Amino acid sequence: MTLPTISPDRAAAMLRAGEALLVDLREADERARSHIPGSAHLPLSRLAEAELAVQQGQPVLFHCASGARTAQAADRLAARAGGAEAFILEGGLAAWKRAGLPVSEDRRAPLPLMRQVQIAAGSLVLAGVLLGALVAPAFHALSAFVGAGLVFAGVSGFCGMANLLALMPWNRRTA
Image 1: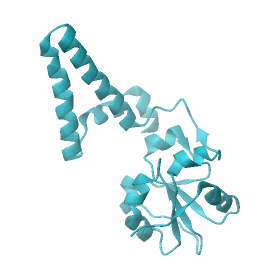
Image 2: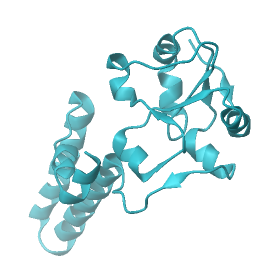
Image 3: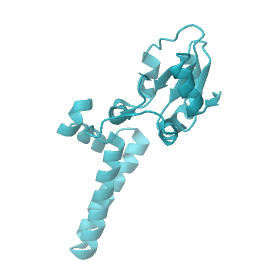
Image 4: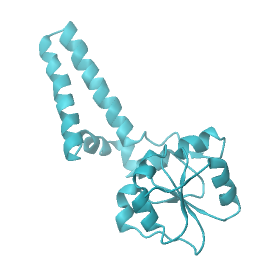
């Protein structure tokens, strides 16, 4: 099942008029950095265990960062809408920002965990390649180790680096 999309401008008009409920499906670490004021928070990872308080006859507008995760989960979201009319915010939070609509931002909040993993893994791979080329070929093993860890994370769904980064002091604030 696919849910129809709604433009950021139309969604904003509905929200200003109190005619819809906007639900942010991003994880807590993503939402801590920026979110649409007045949106409800229901992380997609907790969708099955949470209740969504929908007012009778009020449409539900779902959004993520770009709209991709929301579109992939459309059938699950339609089921959670409790029979209410449901829409996907076209382009997600990125399109909302491009439309110049209000966003609450906290630049002091840490980067989303997956971005931290990408930065750390990329830095380690680059360091392994450079050190392997400039110092000793044995440093290429660092790049191989990180690459193997990323493959394992993709196959198993367990990312040791993400779990380690989540324990860092700068990430404890959003835990």
